[in-house]
Image (tube, rainbow, N blue to C red; front, top):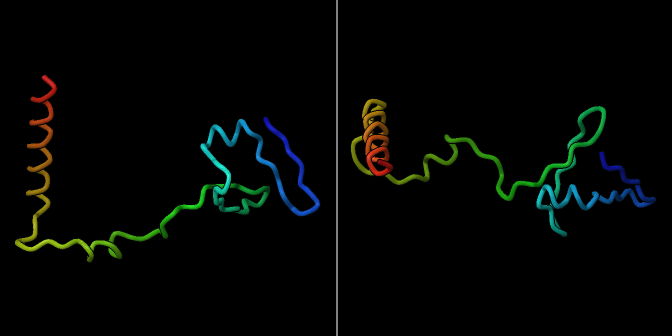
Length: 87
């Protein structure tokens, strides 16, 4: 386990082995999440979280909607073709 100190300015140095393990470079934005008994640091995501409903409307598709059965058949067909290509 690595340890570090809190500076008079509230800064903490993340030990180099941890920065390397998480691929954190200088300038990496981190979210500080209060867990109740400590703080969790996570890399900030470059995009705001969205739901499928929020983004599905941007997908342009013209034609008859596909049924669940149609999608399952397409997946099976793709799996068969993939298996043939591996053999």
